[in-house]
Image (tube, rainbow, N blue to C red; front, side, top):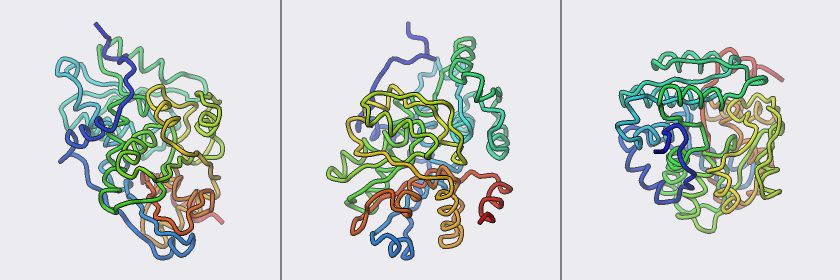
Length: 328
């Protein structure tokens, strides 16, 4: 019998994205697609921003978390779920578990943003802290899951999580029609892999690009080398993308369907946050700005194209937001 905390490798497909959409329908927000004439003029393209910062829980993560929990068998759900995350996945699992009557334990770094810790606690989850620079969150979580007989729901290396995240791109393309380019933030690879599945099935000819922080370009290295590359824990204001490697479930998808991975600097992320706050009246966290920063600062060629851009989240501490927006 397979331990529920160690699911067998199963690479998701577009059919899984469609199944996820049906499973999470009514639970997730169909977030708006926003436009900006100022942004269009800046890059000479038609930009479509999928505002997942307005999703339940403040980030796209709610899609994958809800889908993964909803897909569990009843016998597994009764023992609860365990997840590890710096914040957005933590909140998403805690919230999705509460809505479905499932207990949740979240392993979080001790330096996670206070707003994300508070939100996770507020949803009723138990939090276990660890040091991201000296301890292995994956091993801590696996031990907890095995000890409790709970299901382990990683933030990105899980087929149902990946499929759930892909529904964001599916909604975007169905709303705006054919696009030439899809640009997606990249941390561990769950969002990019899911979006790639959706885009390849519904916008066959579009170019797909992932965006990482400069300090953590493990995905870029992996795509170019053709195998998963591991790096030390990176340091960046993009706290949701401080991963050290891609996942076993998502890398095969990225290798097969993603055209390129580029990087942006922390300075560019701050400038992009300011743009959203000033011009579009949106709060977008640094990680959520990755894709937009790449487009607005020329890391991705997009002149004359119809471009879909994922804004992945808006969970940023107000003190941090004020400091970043006030910086010069």
